Length: 273
Ligand code: NAP
Image 1 (cartoon, rainbow, N blue to C red):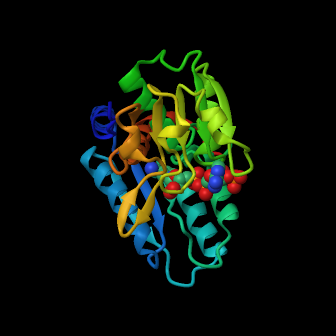
Image 2 (cartoon, rainbow, N blue to C red):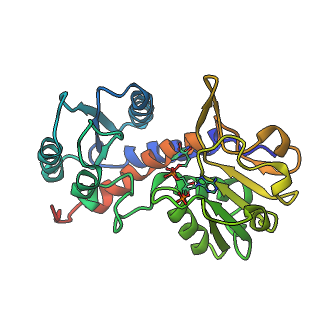
């Protein structure tokens, strides 16, 4: 079975639209952008369009050329304090020379809709979206007792993915660039989440037939978008997400879906920053 993201994303967006309609006012999302980076402009546009379709008031604030870390901090401080701003995203990459860690940490955890901060209300959107997908296609108890392998240990995908799988009672192994013989782990896995950033990294010889494969990777080969998995040779023996059209739409839908929830959490709460 091919696990497409669109039907799951559509269901999440539909539920977000309904939740927004029941609020006193529209949640407001502000995306701080780097106008020098064309690649991220596509992601920003996708987020703005998805928000607009659900009745969320989303806008982009482009940072002026040559902005410094302090320029970002001043803007974020203003957005943190603005009562009408529900969520803040600082779209990566930042303008050259700006300190990513300092900027990321300056966002109020109550407005961190991306879920990048350690004590945010939500985990990062990509792993959270993958759990939505597994729930949709496999049912809420699917992960209980399963062997799951996550390849990649980044802060925004691999590690939070492993935590979420663990929270669903899977037995979880994380593999990374220093892991010896990754196949020995993936061949035992009922679920493999591949987040490496290398085309055709996971091949059919590495997996157990019938396993569920989640391909997070985004790679460009000769201008074509491909994932981390050898989709053509895996799709007939496993359940697998395609790239494009698998995990990608889930990341944006998860982001939009949590804005009305964030709005409700903030209501009557005193903002920390
Ligand atoms: P990242 O920060 O570069 O992390 C990559 C991970 O892969 C690292 O943990 C690294 O191990 C591991 N790795 C690299 N080479 C390896 C090898 N030969 N064997 C085993 N592990 C290896 O990337 P990321 O942010 O997690 O993203 C991963 C991929 O997902 C990228 O293609 C990215 O574009 C994509 N992505 C997609 C979405 C989406 O919405 N679809 C969202 C986020 C990311 P070490 O830690 O040992 O270096």
